[in-house]
Image 1 (cartoon, helix red, strand yellow):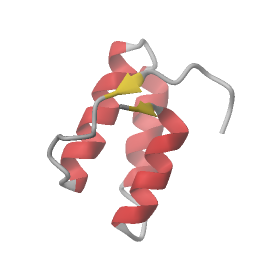
Image 2: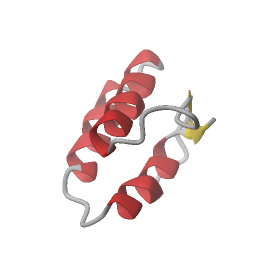
Image 3: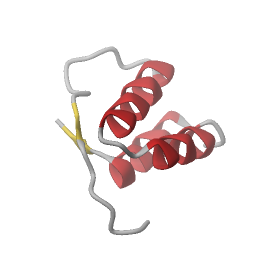
Amino acid sequence: MNNENKPSCKLIGEDGNVFSIIGRVKRALVKDGQRDRANEFVFKAMRQKSYEDVLCLVQDYVEVE
């Protein structure tokens, strides 16, 4: 992953559904002006093999709070 700024994203205490998580991360990236990275994240997240793999990917794109 590159060294672009990682916006914060509130996930702790929120809906843990994988699609909800993907949506929250995408919105955080778009809000931070990183639309291309948001699209890249969704593309990669939808191709992960497990919930845990998505959570690992999330940490590459946002600071989880």
